[in-house]
Image (cartoon, rainbow, N blue to C red):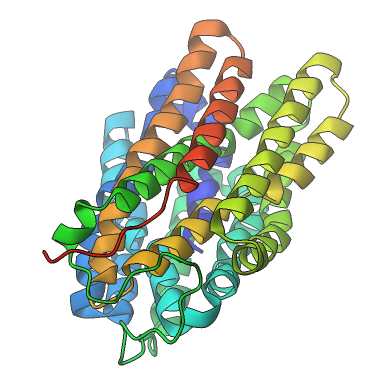
Length: 383
């Protein structure tokens, strides 16, 4: 549900531009705040996970986000919306993000981390598939303010009761096998992890993926509408990306466990880059079939960054402090997502086209794929 709410901002984007009369970059900065908090709150979320447990973390995050959306629905200016939706809502949504869920999956199933994380992450894609068309219908009927009130009600009614029995295994650091050569023992500390090159290569990989995918997700509907696609069809295409990503996430998890983490990420990022190429062809030809091809290719890669990074991080750093270590690693995600969302709007404001931004996406994907191949951990040294 969290990802569905975050990605549904793409549907709110143009109505907010019209409501406040601001530039696209300024409106995109509201979403940038959400994405930035999603990353900057990583250490806090990891700390809370280790000390409070997933049940209280997820329920508290849902209540905070719901309160923020109610306040945002009454915002009279863009700064007020940015504060309520972007800052307070972003903090609540950060607690509900994939970080906590992936930690739970990685700790419960050490022998099949790639597949376990992929299955747990199916809700990310399915939520976006459901929420984006729902947001389009709601915006058409009750406006963006009413849509935010619906999001608040759903968070309280769905997320809070569903997490009543959430927990992690007692022996959280226990591991019966190493999924890949080079995995270390289970006695990592945060200080030791921060001195390991593997940590920083993984952080770079997360930054690159975080920059690339949100840039496209935030601006896809606006781009497609600019190419003559009807708004409802453009929103449906973005929702279909999330539907295809269900198969993509399972495939990524299977590839992770069969081929290894780096080959899996390389294949999925290549698919995403091919999808970006289809958008370039859509701009050149205005043939809607290229949008369909984009959905298939890009959708298979959606979500692959988190699955691969979580599995590889658990290979290396699983232990009593894994939640904290992984939380600090995800600190790279927020700046990447915020920069990507903002950059897409800024490049459009400057050039009048989204094609330069799409070139940035391909470059970021290439750098992220190169980074995962550099994760070769040395034996842990004492903190």
